[in-house]
Amino acid sequence: MDDFELEIKRDFLQEAKDLIQSVEQSFLELERDPTNQELINSIFRFAHSLKGTSRAVGFGQIAELTHSAENLLIEIKNGKIQVNQAIVSILLTFNDKVSEMIEGLDENLDAVFNINELVFELERIANNEPPLGGAVALPAQLMSSEPIVTFTPPSSSDAKWEEEEAPSTDHETLANSAPVMSDESAPAVVLDVVPELTPAFAVPGQTEKTPPPKKERKDDETLRVSLNRLEKLNDLVGELVILKALVENSLDSMGEHKTSRSLGKLCKEIQDLSISLRMVPVGPTFQKMSRVVRDTSALLEKKVDLRVVGEDTEIDKTVLESLGDPLVHIIRNAIDHGVETPQERAAAGKSEAGVVELMAFHDGNFLVIQITDDGKGIDANRLIEKAKKKRIIPETAVLTEQQGIELIFHPGFSTKDQVSEVSGRGVGMDVVKTNIEALGGEVKVRSRVGGGSCFRLMLPLTLAIIEGMLIQTGTETYVIPKGQVQEIIKLNEKDITRITGRVPYITLRNEIIPLFYLQGDFGNVKRPEANVAVIVTQGDVTYAVGISDVLRQLQVVVKPATKEMASQCGVMGTTILGNGRPAIIIDLLNLYMKRVKKETVGLKSAAA
Image 1 (cartoon, helix red, strand yellow):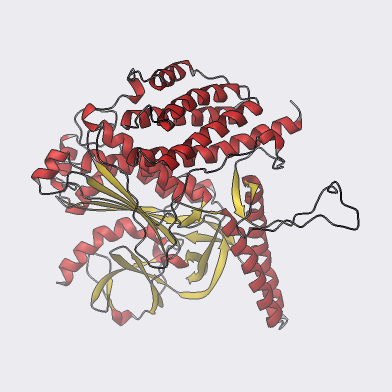
Image 2: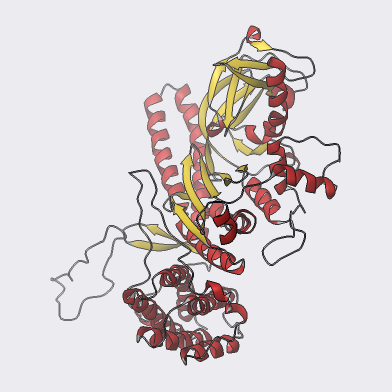
């Protein structure tokens, strides 16, 4: 296989991945609007294009399978077969199989797949014979159910909202188009750039004195770039930020403050641009969840509407790639454990269809993913009893309601007595907590019996470069993320109230706030006097951290900590300062949150 053939195969696979993701939404939309002829035509054009292009690049099995799906779509297009949930299910099964084949071919271009059973089933249904069942069988009572996925625009007036449409035009045969050149076979992302187009050869019939007509450039032209190249660019920009800090120190010492500021501004712009290239919308990941809702609700014989808000919110691609599994677990749990059956909801005075809302928005340096359902909520007392019965907690343990709710994150804990296809193994929510915390994020849950539950995933916008604050504690300097700092106040000994056996506290605007000392808790055996308190607020929890001084704000490149350092609670990573010395980046949330929850209740009781 020569380089050109290899390149067009790789390019096809990448394009096909994007098409498969978008057309899944078209299949789900068809289930809600089965007589939409424009949508049917669009899906048919997709299948026809996929068949022709896959055959052109030598992927015969994809072409064969798509041909069978195309036969079914022709019958739907001509009105001989009516769309229902079973028809959409077989189309989704076809979509899943093509996606599986694309992933397999991406690993091995000579991979062979078993498609006979699915081809046979597609042909049977195309001949108007009833489905054999198996993977596409669904409960009969759900065959005429109401639409299960709806989309609600964001509440903010300035937010952009555009629903992704299915492909509406035929794609040219890939073999006749210019391949996208790449030196690697790594995944690629699409960048919003406008390349300069230079004719590579003279147009027939024109003289050298008459240049060919210049192609008009579109504002939204895109270029596919290897993700490895972006990774390398971000690494280089990180090194540039470190070098900039060193040069700025030298320039400032020579009195060249204007030059130093200009250098800093230029580096900041380059840095922001490099980070933005890695930022991608959460929309495609959110759209995948509509399929999860559809399949899970059908399996459990429930009616569930999915409402999506903030699809255009952007996050670092590396972070986004780790978000899929936690979302699947939370949404499946919401439908299984939270949302009641139609009969139970009717008895409780609720609408038959439950609602799961998936929302994304920015909060400081964090992306917040919020999953809310209007189900029966989490019964903390029941969880506590179950945990005691399974000896997860001692029989004599006394837990608050919130502590009881958070038992759902305990490894191996499940309220189900029997393992089902959806739940019962006690690993789902443990996976959520582990994956999110591995990204430097946090999971929060609130619930009310009869009123539903709300899960919040707090995620860093990027793992590469953060806004930080250089602080001093005793003789040591550390960096803390600026996004974790609510405010900074001067600290006097007379402002501190000390209680025997408990952490001290300060009172700020009539609120009792526990006070911890970074000097004693991190890096120093002896606790020097703290002159400043950093106020940290996360959700409804507020606490103060006493330090010696805040030196300045700065941008830092986050480098992985050593294995020994990473194992220590509160270490987010390391960085290189402007003077060339390394510094530890401290995660104040991770360092103190477990202690804060325990201490806050006791302090309020003692203060009262």
